[in-house]
Length: 252
Image (cartoon, rainbow, N blue to C red):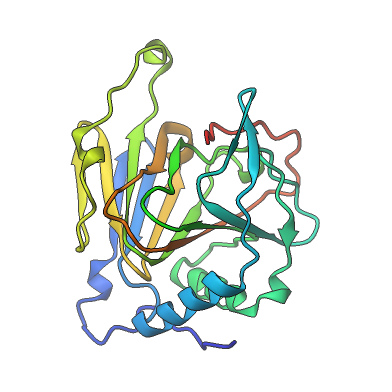
């Protein structure tokens, strides 16, 4: 399968202006591109990923307990990279799945200076699949990792909230009413009580930069009305020279 992908192909001259940069403060930054890949090609990629990727739903061990991960997953990495720690997935080769290399090229074109060498894919079959609050803060990603996330299929809400400070780490933070509301069918970026909400569109790109993983947590919560499949690709750079990675704050 070869798609000859191009970035930002929308004929609307204002499309490029829709790329937004959100300054979270203290060196943390979000970039959101509502249409990174062509709409029709994005659906072709969705079908390919849904059918051809060797998805698994692994048993993971976190904080002394085991649970089945509430979404399907698959991992790709360049040869010789350190293992991920929270469930040690098998690392597949990019060369066996050429469309993934084409998507990687499109991401690098959109983010000059980036050099991603690993990819974690997640498939949410419906609104019951989710990812809980966590940060991608394994040492293998370095102190200020850049993480690029592409979404295909069903629109899902992506939430960010500030990590509690050491002084308030024992205080239970109540769930926002917003987390109980279904995602809308239009792009929505909002902020309430230090929490940011994004509705990630089909073919969109969201990038976390700087100290976002140090200072913020993110999640994709359950949504009853999300009744279709969403596939998410998160590109990261694993630093080969970093050893003894800590276990991340990654719950089931």
